[in-house]
Length: 214
Ligand code: SF4
Image 1 (cartoon, rainbow, N blue to C red):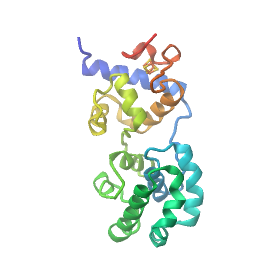
Image 2: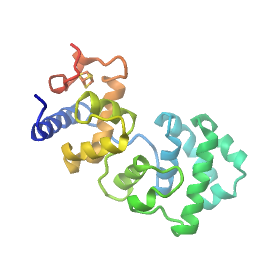
Image 3: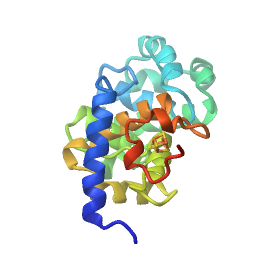
């Protein structure tokens, strides 16, 4: 018999509590000092590890502190600066497009609403939720690769579409845990629920996971 929505919500609360005990230090891994820096770092983090992005951004922000500085740089120079994060041509294009939009449409500030954020080049709901949750105090559920995979394993979601997963998780994860949730699953995905070789016998939520292999 399928689990009722109420039972799924209760199970989600227990899972989150156990993960919070296990990963008490879980927080955003990207380094930034302003919404603008987090915007650029999040664009760079697509298909790239946060560690790699963190190794690139200090020099990048020193060289290009503002949207105007990014736009003034020759595109080849910017591509070279972000080369090691992968997909550097697309990312340079997105960064330049986002900087141009900030300057021409948003008074050189990062906008504070989902509707405005997702109009910026290179910014989807995932990036927008990262910014809303960490810079503007607006709870948002970030569906990254870990959240997508582990939410399905835990049967808190049953879709491969990030937008659908976001909606499904909103129904079962308490709102005050939305921002934390993605950090917990990222830690869990790196430490125990590793793709293709999860360490289920060591998992703190093994008794609450329908996909457990013991
Ligand atoms: S029990 Fe296994 S599959 Fe389920 S969350 Fe834990 S590690 Fe992942």
